Length: 626
Image 1: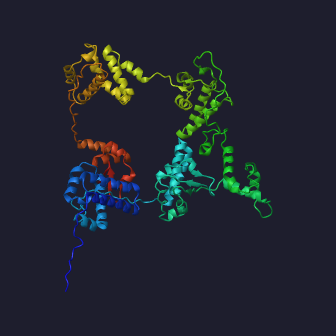
Image 2: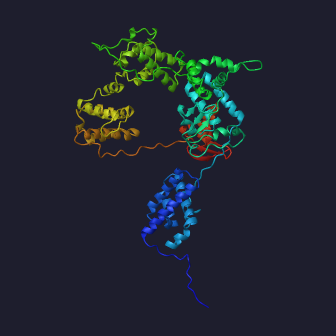
Image 3: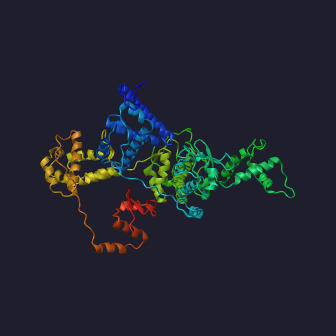
């Protein structure tokens, strides 16, 4: 009987070099990324997991398979102690997934090379607590959807701003009919509607989640009617746009009947032939003989729109706002011969007749009316505002010559006398680069009033400091007029008192600053040193003072107020004063859940989960008590 040497295959054998372990770590991470991508996860999800693993690897400073349970406890208990709960949960989940991959794919290989048995370090003892509860979306019934859009259509007639309301209605109708997501709908442009493709036109969805993956899935009888539409919504493809067949379809049928030479006779419909004779004017040249009604359809639509919503129709009309095309020049008029003026006195627009008809050859006025129409469509101007702005533009541009700049102060009196919005007219002229805003600055007038009564040297330093706060400097960002006003309100009484005995801020000592601070208490004691330190630091940078007297003065902590509980009588009075349902809800949230006013105003219907009896208030999940 012969003897043979038997060796355990699981016996650890040392690695050849550190480069081999580094290469193995890189290969393992690459395989992990490939496996997660094969599972169908998006690139953002895989990149997030790799980022979490990279931060763990940088903290551990060795391969992650050498991590011990004590290392995991130290990392999640000390390093991530003060981080957000979602961050700890996501990082632990990434580490747990990585160790599951190591156990399934590389457990034997790592044991042979390192002698370590790979086991997951995240267990029931150190797993970060927290989870997100999935909400069950309940789709509305077809009757509810029909009621919603029926009421919405009624509001289009009486709404104050037609353009935003029509935009919201169109977006909601697209999401309901075609099945688009919110990001896909908000990224659509007018150029994405391809009217010349297909029978009813097609919708090109280029952005969002659905084009990258697949169209929204139809999950019930309500969605069966749009299954064919939603299946075509992809990136780089065009989805069908559901709409009722309108004049284009009838015009194409009429053109086809005219080309076939159908003569109405007994038993035949006279509609197509009559429409062909009526729409014969709309057939483009050369298209009637080509025998292509599909190509004629979009051209017929454009002709019909131009005839219906031409320049004679008021741009504020509802039909023009729905699809009207304002035929006006959409570019700056070409320069022509200019007669130079001997003198340049300011224009007196009060001599212009506001009711005089506009010159049809005035190219600047035509361009201004086009820009006003476009701004009105974007901003939702109502009809009266559109008419007033057009009237103001006729007054200002009726005597305009090329090369002239319109002064704001010159056009303000006549337009304001006629109750015309000068700001809206100025917006149009600004887009035309014809406006000179020569109004005096309100900041300059305010600064002159506030600096009155200060000594000469102190006044110069304070003025330079306030201008730096308002406008910014080479290394100082602009803080705005509110910051300048707040800082000056804090230090102005002190500067007025110092101006009685000093002529310059370089004469102020540290003892004088401390004496002023001793006279203030509470929030004023905390805010005043900050303002004085900012002033003296600015003067020291400009080298107008020798030493900063506020350099070693401590600001101190802001005094905290002690909240006092309400008496039962006060609570009863608040409950009795809440007579409306909204007021009662706010009182209940404040009394039962301690909700602050901002959190109560931000509460939405989606934050209330009646099925699970949970309430999401101020990013905190709370149970609903009876």
